[in-house]
Structure formats: C-alpha cells, structure tokens
Length: 605
Image (cartoon, rainbow, N blue to C red; front, side, top):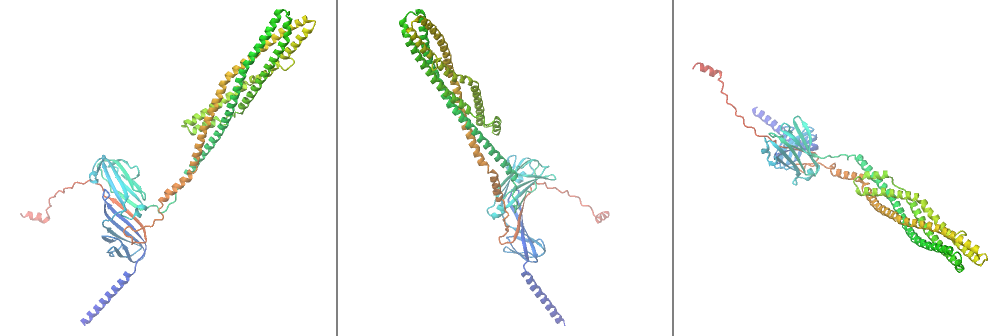
C-alpha cells in the first residue's frame, strides 16, 4: 500500500514537472510585440570631463507580453520593471516583458560618448585642477568645451543639440559672467545654460569672484535638434530692406534727373562760351578797325580845316586854288564813302556777334534742380565731400549765370544803341542827299559852277560860308565818332573779363557734370546691387535654417546597430561635484552607564 502511494506521488510530480517544462518552452517561444524602443544614456564624468561610468536605461513600449530580445555590450544588466531575470549572453539580452512599458538597465564598460567634454579651471589667471579649486577664493574662470568624438557614430554629433547647465551658489559666487549663457534663478542658486548646436564644436566661459568655492556637478543633456520646425517670418525685416532699396532707387532717379539738368546747363554754357568767344573776337576787330576809321576821319577833318583856313586867310583871291578845290572836295567825298562802307561792315560784324551772344544767353536753361532738392541730396550723404563740392559749384554756377543774364538784360539797351548808331553814322557820311559826302559833291559842283559864273564873288562868299559849315559839321561828327570808337575799345577790354567768367562757368559746369555722372553711375550700381537684398536675405535664411533642419533624422541605437525600431535616444551626463574636503569629526567616548545589575552588585561589595 505504501509503495503504491509513493508511485502515485512520483507520477504526479513527474507530470507537473513535464507540464511546467513544456509550458515554459511555449512561453519562451512567444516574442513580445514591441511598438518602439527608447534609450536614455546616463554618464558620470569627472570634474574635468573624463568619462567614468556609462549606463543605459532601455525602455520598451509593448503591445503585448512576451520575450524581449535586445542587443548591447553590458557588463551587467538589471530588470527595473519586474523580478524576472534578465539574461545577458554575448551581447544578446533576453527578458520576459510585461505591461505597456518595460524597463531594464545595462551598465557599459569603457564606453565613449559622442562628444569629448573638456573642462578647465583657472584661479586668478593660473590653471588649476578641480581639487585645487575646491575651497579656494579669488577670481575663478571655467572653460567648457564640447568637440566631436570621431570614434562614435557621427549621427549623434551631427543631429543632437547639447544643453549645458552650470549651477552656482550665489552665497559663494559673485559678479558672475557668462557671455554666451542664459541665466535663471533657482532659490539662492544661479543657473547658467549654454546650447551647443549640431555639427558645431563649442567653447563657453564662466567667470566669477568666488569665496570658499564649491559647486554642484554640471549637467549635459543631449537630444535630437528640432525634429521639425517652421522657418521664421522675415517679411517685416525684408520689407524694411525693400523700403531701403526703393529709396536708393528714388535717389538714383533723382541724381539721374540732376545729371540731366546739369548736362543741359553744361551744353547751354558751352554754346554761350562759343558765342561769347565769337562776340569777343568781333569786338576786338571792331575796336581795331575803329581806330583806323578814327585816324582816317582825323585826316579828313584836318584837310577840311586846312581848306577852310586857307580859303578864309586867302580872302578868296587865289582862283587857281579854287580851280583845284572841286577835285579835292570830290576826293574827300570818296574817302567819306569808304569810311561809311567800313562803318557798315563793322555794323554787320557787330550785329552778327551781338545776335549770337543774345541767342546763347537766352538759351541758358533756368536752374533745373532746386536748392531744396540739392540740400536733400546732401542730407542723404552728409560726409561725401565730393558731392558737397559739386552741389556748391552747381549753386554758384547757376547764381553766376543768373547774374550774367540780369546784367546782359540791363545793358541790352546799350548794345542795341550800337546797332542803330553805326548805320546812322554811316548814313551821315554817305548814302543820302543830306550826307556829308553828298554835300561835298554838291559843294564841288557849286564851286565849279561859281568858277564858270560871272557872279563869282557871291559864289566865293557862299563857298566860304559852306566851308565853315562843313568844318563845324565834320568836327561834331569826328567828336562823336571818337566817343563811339572809344566806347567800343572800352567794351572790348571789359568784355574780356566777362568772356573769361563765362569760360570758367562752362569749365566748372563740365566738371560738375562729370562728378554728378560718377555719382549717378555709382547710385545705379548701388541700386542694382541692393534691389535683390530682400530675396537674398530670404534665400540665406532658408539656406541657414535648412542646415539645421533635422526633421529627416531617424534615431539609431547608441548601444548596438542591431537594435531596430528605436524611437528616441537621449543623453544625460553629469560631472562630479567640486567640494572641499571636510575634516573628520572625532567622536568623544562617552563613559558606559552602569546597568541595574551592576548597580545591584556594587551594593554588596
């Protein structure tokens, strides 16, 4: 009976063991449904940045229970979710996962981070170690560097942003400075944050005045940079540049109009200069010929005077001399006709020169650019000395042109009188019945008639009176002719100064035009080079922002390339604290208090 019971128990035990073994095999064969995997890499580094320990918390988002397979070179592993054992065999990790999220931790040996972290410390300008800095006082500076580690997959360095947080106790640290950091307060602590962008080696500095210096460990957090973001709206900035380029365009158009106005003034002054030169030449010829005419007239006057004086002194008795008188008179008349012809020629030359001058002065354009516009142009370029000189020259030139036109208008009556005076003088000498030449011819005929007339004595009386009148009349004419030729000579001399001023104005306006043309061409180039600034800014911003657009980055496992379906990997790195060594406290040995039994024993001793 006893044996039978034992056999029954053994059968039940064997059956249970077989069921357990087969059911375990069935469960082991069922893989968990992993929706995604996340990795959080924790690293402890020294105060100088040397890696000490690296561990990874692996997080699985499950759709159902089952066996999880993962990969990683870990020295040891630990289940953080259940009590189930995590098996680590040659880099392959297996564990039974339960629930929606399952965690296990793996510790790595000799692991390297994607960034080399370097931290240097300086006390009063001298480089010191973290241990030497602990408990020190003075000017403290820390230099933090993150650089690419070529031994680790570059995907992390190229796509991750590293945020560095430095925590300083404001009781110990004063006058804190960090040029590239962002500051925040947390109680009595000052938090300084730096951000190192992807693909960039970074260097940051923190300085302070420290007393008995100590510091919490720095923290480096690295996550993928902006998996997707919108480019900033720069329409406000580009619209401002558009206004600037439009203003440059308007300025260019204004200088173009200014240059056109200066060109018209330049051309007008050049024509005036040419006409003025011709007028000056005509006045010179008129002055030179006027002297010859005056000399001839002087000789005629002397001849008439000599004849009259000779006739009067002779008493009219020398009939032979009277017989020669008609021929002499006609010779004088012919000479006067020549003088009249010279005056007519001079009048033609003067009229041509005067007409050219009047037309050129009338063709000078009015000031095409107002002083207000010129002053506005100077306001846009207050330091451009060349432009200031050109504008000043332009104003002075147009002022001089205005004065010239005013003076010419004021003296126009005098110029016109010359046009009428010369023909009048020529007509007095010859060409009419009342001219001196006609009178001389008539007088010659009278003398001839008198010589042939029996009443000759009365003829002599008439002849004497005629000679006296002729001398008086010609003396008046000669005096007026002298005043006229003297005026022409004076005008020729004075007009040389006017002609020189016109030439200087024409030359100055030419220089002004050349300068304004250079400014105009420069503004055209400036407008051409700046009109596309808004588009170029937008393109540069797009290009710059695109280089940091990591939206196409697909996370990869930090611990093993065999791990797939990774949705997130992040790094949390912390440095050691900097703290001074506290002296060991010596505990006082307290005397042992006697127990009740000891006290009772002492009573019986």
